[in-house]
Image (cartoon, rainbow, N blue to C red; front, top):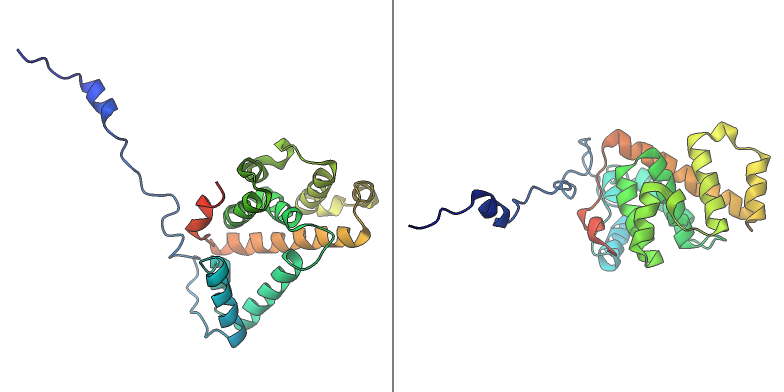
Length: 212
């Protein structure tokens, strides 16, 4: 007489049923607002083409701003100046500020997008995860820790920033120009975090798998 199969063993042998991705729709429903895109200016059309060429996609934040060319161009100009232009802060340090501020604000868009940038620039996927979850758990240099402590305090309790905080940055090796740049990057991401939260802005799905 054939032995009946063990139901528990059969169930355990079956592959787990795949659930829909939590990121489903991120590439198609970019914000919760119905804003019709404006015709791209020649400058922004060239910029979008450059993104496609260098990144392989246009970041959703740019598409979200594309209902108004003046706002899009202002956003791109400020972002490129703060994050890519010459500075006493490295590109990785600026991305670390973006992630630490976004973690304080729990900004889904910026944690996904700029967490990927930290992974890419550092070559360390673990650092990218630590930055997104709790930068204080990361093995940071004294310079990095001072920079991020300042940026997060400026985010959470800006009224408490005083001379002692700026002095701590100087002791860590930052110039007064660097302090300005730390503040400007932190301030920019506080703005973008709030716009992203208000509009339910969604990141490109491709970010999730980058530099893992």
